[in-house]
Length: 130
Ligand SMILES: CC(C)(COP(=O)(O)OP(=O)(O)OC[C@H]1O[C@@H](n2cnc3c(N)ncnc32)[C@H](O)[C@@H]1OP(=O)(O)O)[C@@H](O)C(=O)NCCC(=O)NCCS
Image (tube, rainbow, N blue to C red; front, side, top):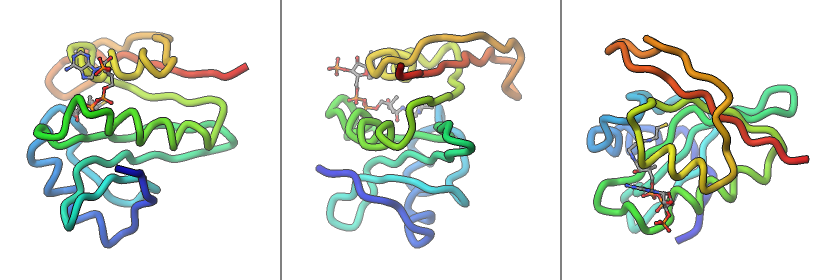
């Protein structure tokens, strides 16, 4: 499976995927993306932006039946080449995502209590290449 750039035509299928991923942010439009597609189905996507040379991961989702197959790793490995500094926020209770980001060199920078609507704490993580 290889990552390809996403396009606005993919956004409806991103939204279909998000129905199965309540841990992800429930929006998928308006930003650059990479995705992994099998036949007509989008199995994984990442949304991002790069501003002043620093990247931010805005959303990431892998279909539950396609997890632990390194799809997220493949997407992020392709994306992380685009900038030497990356930032993201992740819910403190989202152990799988935190482990994924740590495996790719992200480190915690700070926490923001009550960041999400449900009162959950956000973990801010960054990856800085020397
Ligand atoms: C988090 C998520 C994107 C991971 O996608 P994935 O394709 O399954 O991840 P990968 O297969 O690339 O995993 C890479 C590494 O991350 C870690 N990891 C991933 N899922 C894990 C889990 N459930 N438990 C522990 N570690 C996990 C492991 O170190 C794994 O390497 P390994 O399989 O060789 O041990 C996926 O679980 C998902 O879509 N979750 C719901 C949405 C979400 O939480 N998005 C992130 C919002 S910030």
